[in-house]
Image 1 (cartoon, rainbow, N blue to C red):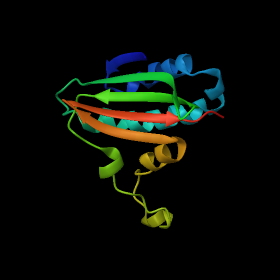
Image 2 (cartoon, rainbow, N blue to C red; image 1 turned 180 degrees about the horizontal axis):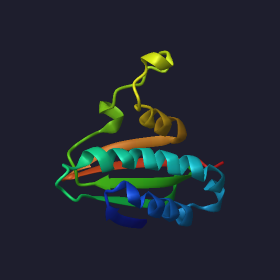
Image 3 (spheres, rainbow, N blue to C red; image 1 turned 45 degrees about the vertical axis):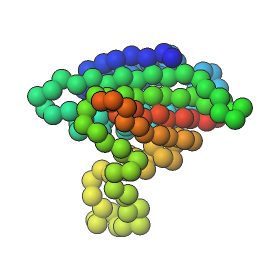
Length: 138
């Protein structure tokens, strides 16, 4: 698996975007912008909430082509060593039917991830949060 480890800071997103561009197979190039948005949404949560402010945390991102039941997927793995947090179980669901005046700022990131990714998973292993996103080709 192709992977990088960087400080968990928003200013490193451009490096992560380039990493995904370099790692994405040709069949996934048409979806790359959506893939980058989904990965960015997941990582922004890590950057802002996984670590206490006084801790210089890290984030690991890996990517590779995998096959599930004979179908190709672009798999992106994200790992951090922050506090335990399962975004798929713990993040509140947005009220998509509320008026703009009644909506809170934010809260749509995980909704976007779930719409863009074909499959997703979270696990806590030892002291890490591990998220896997699987993207179908164009």
